[in-house]
Length: 185
Image: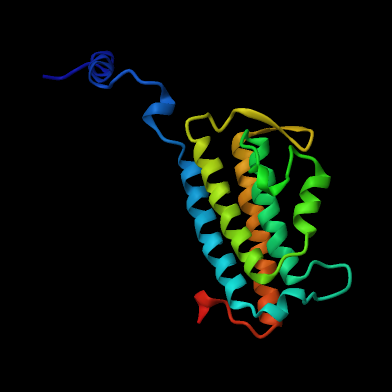
């Protein structure tokens, strides 16, 4: 028995459940970004642990972030960027909204190596939870990011690429201090 194209299409619709497209296909971009964030987290935290405490104050030049400041910057932005997607920073961070001053206060506060590493780990847990909390939303949902309209997907791509920027910076800092990244030993 041969079906006409119209009959074949009708048969297909009869057997495929009528679900919204979002329910049929999970947000694969978000899943990929979450996987990538987990990998970057392992590398950044691994580098932070591999760096001796005295190297946390090292900076390649005046006016450039030190090793420890780069890790604190990553932690601060792991709290800041989810705010734009609707997940506030934990109250304990002191980061309120997208207020630059509160992010700067968090990022530049005095913290020893152990505190910086703990902050980095906690900030990644927050970031992953915030990203996961948006999984049911459409990646095309719009939000305001630094005064501009962006999609939710753009927020998470920016967040992930930002992490890669500072991973590269941290690798260069580690190697400048004679530290081999743990994953390349």
